[in-house]
Amino acid sequence: MNTSKSQRTYALSVVEPYITPEGSRAPTTSIPAASTWKNSTLRRRIRNDRRGHRWGIPFTETDRVFLGGRIERTKVMTNANSPQRYQTYRDEFGKDPLSFALTLGWSRDSRDNSLAPTRGVYQRVNGEFALPGLDIEYYKFTYQYQQYIPLSKTWTLAFNTELGWGDTYGSTSMFPFFKNYYAGGIGSVRGFESGSLGPQDTNGDNLGGDRKWTGSVELLAPLPGGDRTLRIFGFLDFGSVWGYEACRESTASTAVPT
Image (cartoon, rainbow, N blue to C red; front, side, top):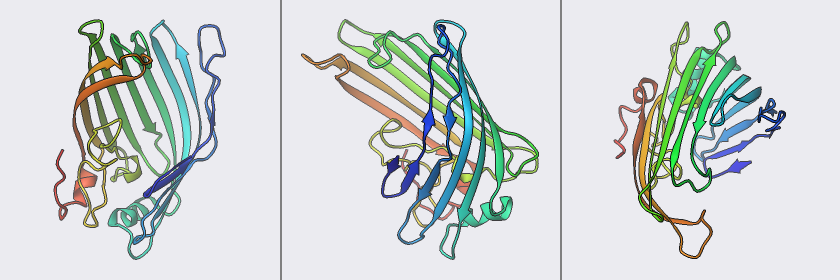
C-alpha cells in the first residue's frame, strides 16, 4: 500500500521465486489493484483493476526472461472540473474499457553485488503490448542500462540510463494517459519533486508523456566503519518526459526546467 497527498495505491501479489533448482520463477499472481489520484479542487479518481500472471525463466547464470499477461479494466470518473484529458479518455474508450496486455522482459545482470555493486553491468528490457480487438490498443517499451566501474579499492564510478517509448496502433488514436511515463524525484532525477518533469496542464498538474529519457552519473564510496551498503556519493542526474498527447494539453502551461 502506498499513499501520498496526490495518490493512493494498493496491490497484492504472491511470488514463488524458485520452483526449480535452476531458479525458474513461478507465475506471480496478482489480485485487482486500485489507484486513486486525489486533488481537493478537482476531486478526481481513477480506478485501475488488474489481474495477471508473470513467469521468470533463467537461461544462463546472468540472463533471465519474463513472460506474462494481464487483464486491465480502467475506469475514469469525471465531473465538471476534471481535466480535459479525463473527458477525452471517456469519449475515446467509453465508461469502463477493457484491455489484455501481454508482457515480455529480459534482464542480464553481471554485477558483483545487487545491493552495493562495485563492478559489472545490469541491463533490462520490458515490453507491454495490448492485444487487438479490445477497447484499447497500445504498446510501450522500457530499456535500462547500468554500469559500475571500480576506480580504486574505495571509489566506484556508476552510470545509469533509462529510455521509454509508448504509442498506439489500430483504431486507437489516444495513448492512455495513465500509461504515461513520469520523471523526477528519488530513483529518477533527484532534486525535483516526484513526477514533476515535463509538460503541465493549465491547472499546473504534471502530465507525464509517452516518451522518457533519464540518466545519472555517480561517484560512490562505502561509509567508513559502516556496512558496505551504507555509502557516500555524489551524483549528476538529468532527463525529461514528453509526447504528443501530453503536449497537446499543455500549450498554455509554463515550461518546467529539466
